[in-house]
Amino acid sequence: MSNEADTTTRTRLPLRVFSARAVWQSGTSAPAASLALAVLVLIAWQYLPPMFGVPKYIIPRVSDLWNEMIRMWLQENLLRHFISTASMSILGFVLGGLLGAVAGYALGLLPTWEKVLSPYILALQIAPKVAFAPLFILWFGYNAWPKLIVTVLVVFFPILVNVLQAMRIMDRDLINLARAYNMSKTKIFLKVMLPYSMPNLLAGLRIGATLAVIGITVGELVGGEIGLGYLISFGQGQANTSMVFDAIGLLTVIGVIMYWAVTSVENRILHYLPRAVGAQRSP
Amino acid sequence: MFLYEQDLPVPSAKSNVLRFLDVARRFPGRTAGAPPFTAVRDLSFEVNESEFVSIVGPSGCGKSTLLNMIAGLDHPSEGTVSLHGVEVVGPNSSVGFMLQKDLLLPWRTVLHNVEFGLEARNMEPGARRERALKELKRCRITGFADRFPYQISGGQRQRAALARTLAIDPDVVLLDEPFSALDAQTKIVLQKSFAGTIANAGLTTLLITHDLSEAVAMSDRILVMSDGPGRIVDEIEVGLPDRDNPIARLATPRASEIVKHLFHALHIDNRLDA
Image (tube, rainbow over all chains, first blue to last red; front, side, top):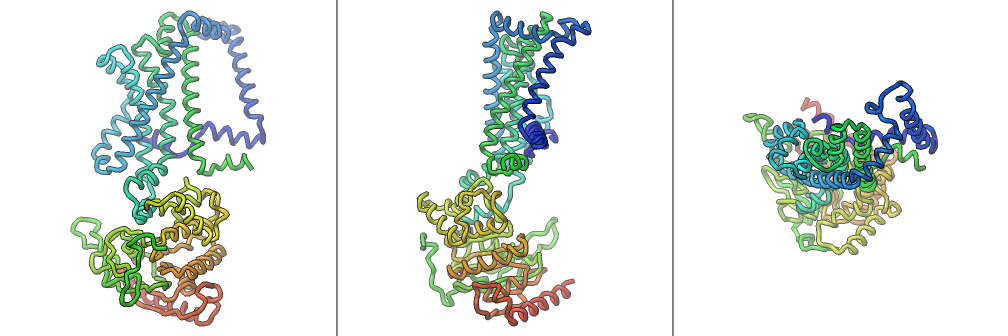
């Protein structure tokens, strides 16, 4: 509970730390420093493990990773696996997000139902959803459904909880104002409640975007013949450490892109919220 | 300017716009079996066409209850509240209210906030915009039409809230401590601005305030409420000129006399209730 509740406040830690540093260093030196750090780490990765005699099957070198990536592209149909994981993540994210938002608004509008259902929501929220994956395979077989359902479940809850929170802390005076203007309930929902909950909904979606990749990966690890998660378990079976590293890297890329997409939509929608650091940066 | 039938004034004997008749409001006790809590009782008063009436009283004297009953968000347990001789039974578009909080929607520009109240009606977007712009002009914030609430000051926000309140052409304007969250200087400027706007438009206004000199500076008549349960204990005809200029008004000897009188009235009451 607390984990997801905390995230409802609009703290975007990575971005904020980044921006604060940018201000502190007064300029564009921060991205350059990040890049330099990446280069440094890659060089260390390439040369340090062999120096200390760490074998390739424990920590492959950067050049091994690169060679393996090319091999996978040519021989293992990497693109097909990548597209499968990416599209399933997005599909699961969209479905889970939609269901979570609809459920959040519905429960927010029906407080009695919320009270009746809240212990079960809490229980389901705490239950490790990825642990359901083997169960779904038993039920639905080795196809796309198990991983998709796991992902929908994983994405569903943070969004539900965030939306519900917004509906709970809604400013009653705003609703009363709209009521005093003789506004219909539909209009009150569309013109007041929905925009009011937007920061929370988007915070939920931001968490959901990263969780979606986890859901799909677990589904693919447990049982599947396609996707980057499958490549990880395949690589593990062959003691092909480079393959595992590469697949993890690509999964991270998918997650980062999804996170970035949600964040940029968020910044566009929530432009009306003052941001302290942002205000300092653009005088 | 009357857009709807319900906005048409119904001729009444005394031309009063708002009328409370023996109104009481009780709320059920907090726990089962506890006696009901009486917020207000024996409330009878009238506000006439174009009159500015203030209600002063200690906090907790039931002023929010009173406002909610006028706005149709709450109903009296006894007695009737009527507007132009018609009993208030639910929210209606002839009441405009404004609180200490500006209640501007942060995701809308000032102009779109002013249009908000008009969106409950089936109005042409063009006409709505025109109406809102007219109101912004009247409240002297035309220059901020495209700003978002976080980009303007507290005083400007309250001006925008007044514009939104006036945009629906209310028969009566309810002001619930609209100046109390502002700093002293902004408060004076805004009081003058509001007084001018209200006097020019000939609006029927009910102001609820803690601030005794504000009540004297702005109103034609002052009703003094006591708490526990709220009832009217005194009524004062201000009888000063220059209702559109509160600063000039406060400088007169009669103004300080009334303030002193009010202070007394409230003070004595507090002691009795203590």
